[in-house]
Length: 390
Image (cartoon, rainbow, N blue to C red; front, side, top):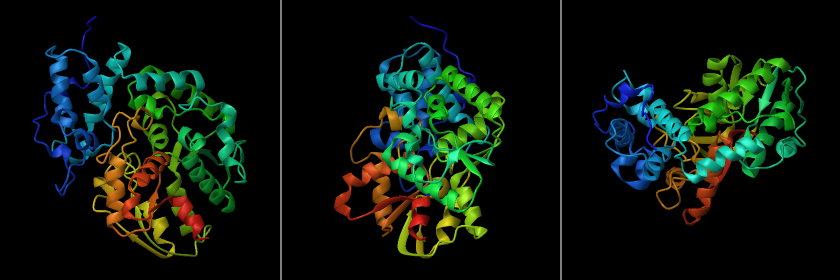
């Protein structure tokens, strides 16, 4: 059955000249679009997708499983918007891709792994299909208490709550905040899914439902200030919840750590190590937070911070964004974004790769196992790195 093909930012689609800048970082030494790097066909590049969408909107190509797979291979890293030379519409590219995915969702033409993800969120409240009672196991031994009017809510998110790599990250952050005397609480098993990946995958109605329920719950509890573990949740709370009536003061945990170090409430001692830092897409390009994690790491005596060639606004994505962490449409192999990033980290001579996102931590941890022949590289969260220096 066919249907009317229409998206809000339709005009943007017709303005792309396929110049190719969206594929590259500013130094033009390599491709910076993860899906293009993996598959190598122009249809998997941002400009290629726009031309496919243009043909799809005009009815020249049909809605198909192949069309859906190409759309869903985008990791929403934002490199295309960062490097598009046409500022009049560059900040709408990800909106276009998301809007087309919403059309595909509305008419049931989505990859099976995407469908399974939505089902898990709808039925279990988390993508792991685990009991809500397990959501706060990461907080055991941190000293954190349930939220009861404290200054901050610490929001862990699904990955930090259920994945063992993310749990270690959340535990380290929780212990540091407790030790620094921050007035902070957690929702424990009552913590909801923030819906960020739901939105990125195009399920607009489910995201709206999750966000509105969360906004009502946060307001009922008197929550005004949120510390987010996950940059994806940070992005949702800060940039998308306000559109639905939920205006909260939102911080990423690295911003709080940087402040605590500056105030002397956290006093890291010495860690003799060469460290390189990976900028998460949703923290860096999407929200322009580059300095807070670096200030925290530089405050550690003996730590040498070295940059990968692609960093800050030109950082290369780990491949987990846009829901790909759960759907795995980018797949495996040498050109998998996480593997490429691990090789870039090795090239700096660092012994530690510091991260600030539970999705990045898991993606890069898995990729490091594939690249063990290069040597030993430890994947540590910024908070874990600080904790090691205490």
